[in-house]
Amino acid sequence: DRPSVGGFMNYCVGGKSANLGEMLNVAQVPVPRGFAVTTTAYHAFMAHNGLLDALMQKYAVLDTGNREEMNLILEDVRALIRNAELPPELIRSFDQQWEAVFGQEDLTIAVRSSAQAEDGDKSFAGQFLSELHVSREELPQSYKRVVASLFSPSATLYRLLQGIPLSDTAMAVLCLEMVHSAASGIAYSHDPVDLLNETVVINGVW
Image 1 (cartoon, rainbow, N blue to C red):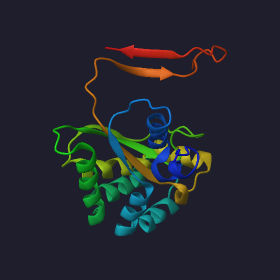
Image 2: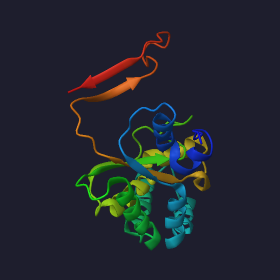
Image 3: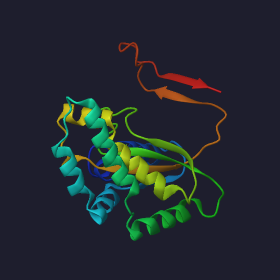
Image 4: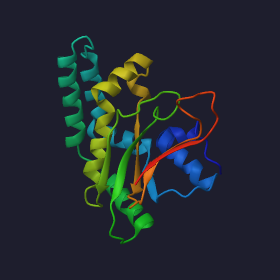
């Protein structure tokens, strides 16, 4: 079925993964091989360690007027996530999906944020973590670091400014094969500088 970017797929895998799914399955544009770690996995990770209650306690004393104290509290939050144990079934799922998509190929992946509110009507551009050249063995720790970036100071302030509650916050993660490209860049379907110009703009570098 055609995935809905604004609906169920976006809720489960985040805007970034849902948009790539549309490109591949609807527009049939080739994209790197990969898989998404869903928001269900995020909630299972949080529940496995009782992290949500701990985060709510930290948030209750968050003072955005005191940036130094706020940064220290959020660093504690990120450390809790980075040091928490992943559910065994999630680790098994990482291995199963890697095997299903990549087999025994010797490659690395990009582990990218795909939060629920990201790449939608709100812009979290540059506020979450992406990690490159991640091996199969490194994936579990990389996953936790990307999830932890959900609580960076800039992302937290932006959520508060936009009125997005913590209960509506979840991080899906996108795992994509690294591409050894001859050139890379960005294609804009609409000129981002001249809004009256409907020309497609492609910026690329070797």
